[in-house]
Each structure stands twice: as structure tokens, then as C-alpha cells.
Image 1 (cartoon, rainbow, N blue to C red):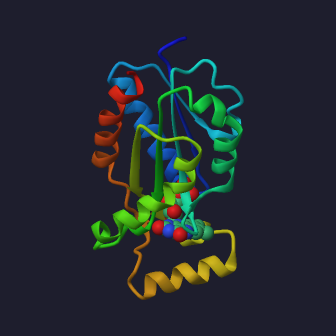
Image 2 (tube, helix red, strand yellow):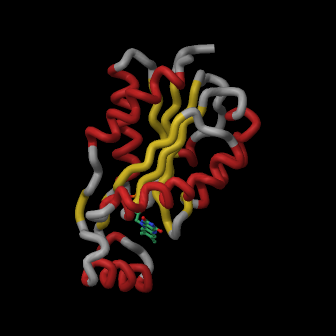
Length: 173
Ligand SMILES: Cc1cc2nc3c(=O)[nH]c(=O)nc-3n(C[C@H](O)[C@H](O)[C@H](O)COP(=O)(O)O)c2cc1C
């Protein structure tokens, strides 16, 4: 088998794709061959030595296509080093550290399918105009008005790169 790592993602508005690309670039700069692809395009994991999978969080959960990916590839993923990450707005809050432990529980359904060698929890981005549902737009406008969340890009590239660097040896072991 090659030493190639797959970094795959589920993203609605694009911020998780950006996180996946940064993880892929960091792994690649560390000497690994990497493919970065949307989960929905991935059919076969045979070519990969290790897999990193990540999703945006909606309603405290990975996106449905991400859970579908895990269920479809569960048997193969249990045979390879596997790392998971999530991207959410809760970790963009001023007192985000207080919520990290709770946010980590959102990966429990993933852990129940395949135990990751490493887990990354990242702040994402919010652009209310891109949210398709009127009800969700209203909810998020209220979150902004009441000061829970701030619109904008909260991705912490240093934290993302640092996680990828710590995950690399665990993925290539
Ligand atoms: C419909 C919807 C539901 C969301 N639910 C949550 C949530 O439960 N917890 C949270 O912290 N962030 C939540 N978010 C924020 C997203 O996780 C965040 O904006 C993320 O960066 C989106 O990733 P994407 O740009 O790849 O789609 C939600 C966003 C949307 C649009």
C-alpha cells in the first residue's frame, strides 16, 4: 500500500473545506502524499494508508453525508489509522475553552463507529446570508444580536496546522 493519506470533508458553506485543505497542505509539507476530497466523491479507500475525515457541525452533529461516509466505510476505516475533526461556531465564542469538553461529545457517534487516533476541534466561519433556511437565518441573526456568535471567519490556522502536525506521526505509524 502507498503512504498516501486521504483528507476528506463534508462542508455546506466552504469553511470546513478550507480547514481540510490546510490539514492536507500541512501533512504534505511534512512529507506525506495527500489527497483532499469531498466525502461524497470518495468511493474507495484502498489506495490510502490513513484517512482524516472532518465535517461541519449542524445541530451538534456531523453533517448527514459525513455519518453516511463513516457507516459506508466503517469496516475499512477500522483497519487504518483514522483521525477525525469537526468545525463549529461554538469554538469561536469568547469563552470557547469552557465548551471544548461538550463540543468533543459531538464526535461520540463517530467514535462509536471507528475510534480516531486523534481528534481536532476547530472554530469555523459564519456568513448568515449563505444559510439556505429562513428559520436558521433568523436563529443565527438572533445569536449574533444577543452576542453569542459573531459573523465572520474564526478559523485559527495555527491551531489547525498544529493539530495536523501532531496527527501526522499517528497516521503514518
Ligand atoms: C444550519 C446550521 C446549524 C449549525 N449548528 C451548529 C451547532 O449546533 N453548533 C455549532 O457550534 N455551530 C453550528 N453551526 C455553525 C457551523 O458549524 C459553522 O458555521 C461551520 O463553520 C460551517 O461549516 P461549512 O462552512 O463547512 O459549512 C451551524 C451552522 C448552520 C448553517
